[in-house]
Length: 181
Image (tube, rainbow, N blue to C red; front, side, top):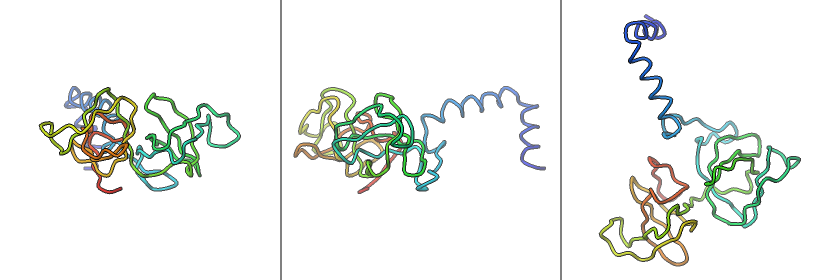
């Protein structure tokens, strides 16, 4: 029996389950890059993925060429950006506000950063909510990340080093873990 024959038999005998499976897959795909992940045609790296601004001034363009108009000018080195498509030397990206456009690859770095998404996000000495709070970060502060586990990311900002809950950052997927990237 071929796999598509099995799918057809399953669909006919269990239409409710088949519909449920399709709906569930469609609902979870945008929230689970590990399930819906592909790779870039130019780099072979995972898509979507996060990178960051390499310079203090980076232009977001409407299309993948310098011929296209500039849509936004980012003025913050280290600002995380989500890459979801590649075309030659250009990366189609989405920022934390949902703006999309194209950035030339040499304007981005794979060094990891995370941007705080809530005010007064605590930075802890250890990866534990009971640990000493070193500082509180305001929304928009960008952390230089050295590693992220299941719940905590270790990083630094303005001379402060410690741990921040991954859920308080934009620039890291919820299920993503890395060390020393």
